[in-house]
Image 1 (cartoon, protein in one colour):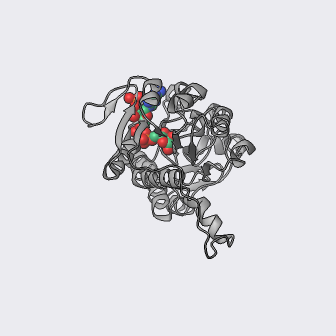
Image 2: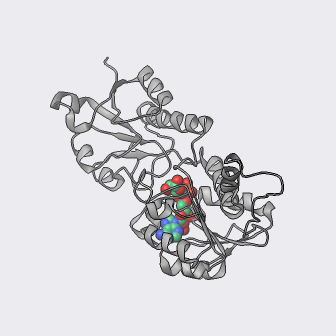
Image 3: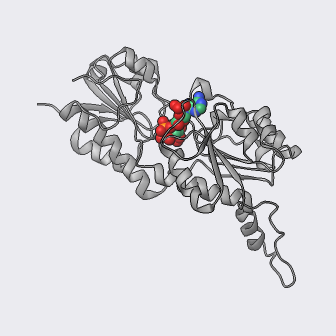
Length: 315
Ligand code: A2R
């Protein structure tokens, strides 16, 4: 019997690709470029980027799309659902790494460690000269977490030993956590002086971090984003950082990656990272394994490890 054909459009983690090739006939191409015979053979897709409705429609016998990463906004999961195609992602295995990054980025933003290191490397540390005191401290801050899901809860747990007050905003209150709940983002922004965003890219989260929310955070305010750049009105953020409406920002994600607006690059009070929150070898390996194991689970047992909520499971 011939092996199951799996399409890999675009770039894929090397370990995932190697493991896929052990099990499946891997076709590395775009869906649109396949001839009709090949398109009919494809039963699975492993993707690390975009997979939209037209690509799904081009594969008549597609059963499953295994997406690399926890955010699967690049895959048209709603359209997949209408076609009975299961979409999977790689949640949980990256929670610790992303939460660790969030804490590192928060400290870097508040205490200016990257700028201080650049100052040292530039030869400025000479007798009698010391790096200026950081304007801000993490001590005594009130941190609001926008999105208290799998990753948000790990961030909150890591913040506890820093002795900061922790509050959160989500659409639904979580009765199992000891943090104060705010039913609107504006209420949260008014109550806290530090905000960490870790919400998915959805129509409801688009540019929700806007001028109003930033001005509610206030001049001592610090904003950190490890979720999606989509959530932020970057023009408003750059303006708020420049005018002093907020104090500082730490960003791992941007609206139109890899484009980072010049207005942000120019600011001394922004710490900017190239979307690396889950980017360690061990964590990316675990995510790569999950991409393969989702497909294997589906093809061998009809049970992928992590189907997304939009897509039904069929037996
Ligand atoms: O709103 P809820 O109760 O569904 O809580 C979720 C929250 N969330 C929102 N909060 C306020 N307004 C919204 N419109 C909204 N939409 C979602 O975000 C939940 O607390 C959190 C998402 O948690 P999880 O689904 O467990 O996602 P996880 O694994 O923490 O990853 C979050 C995102 C990914 O989607 C990637 O975009 C990024 O982090 O790596």
